[in-house]
Length: 239
Image 1 (cartoon, helix red, strand yellow):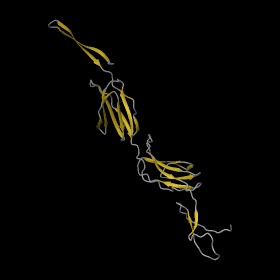
Image 2 (cartoon, one colour; image 1 turned 90 degrees about the vertical axis):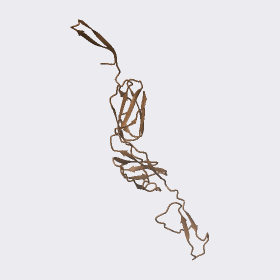
Image 3 (cartoon, one colour; image 1 turned 90 degrees about the horizontal axis):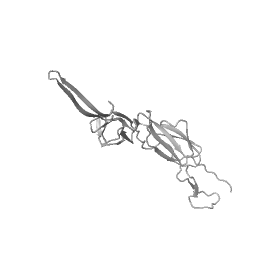
Image 4 (cartoon, helix red, strand yellow; image 1 turned 30 degrees about the vertical axis):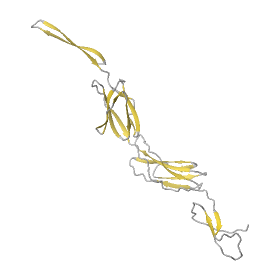
């Protein structure tokens, strides 16, 4: 029956007594409860709101792993799905009518990488450097991104990348986890700050001299600030 008001009749007759009649009962068929709105599948960590086709308060019930985790009453149902898994949402009217189960599939959002990206934090413009991070979370892949005048050489996915830096910086080398299922759920970024060192080397005489006698011996020190050079070559030129 479609929703509405009906009269149920029961006609009776007793042949022996020669009498009969009709018994009547007014009944109401309530509208079907259908859960609408919200999403059927999404990444964890988001909030969704659901309602019903009737637009009247109902008793909601949300189950996760066969355990009831929420059972409010109202026109709408709002929940933050912080954990991945299969959820079953139902709605019941005050008259006891129950909706069909509404199945919600939630994919767990990968955890944001922690620790440190391996690679140089001081770079020279025009040079390519390697960066890496060990991904230990199954079902995910690392995706990289760089900012500033920098470009990833080759693929931007996997445990390592090569980056070519140009310009003066500063730069950022960033990595995140992305799930390998169809939803491609994304974690937050882990960031490594990279810069071109501002090198202003200063040479000083260890004896604080500026004038030197012929055939004398003295020593000099070159200060390169925070940069430690691999090789220093000294030379003397006539001014």
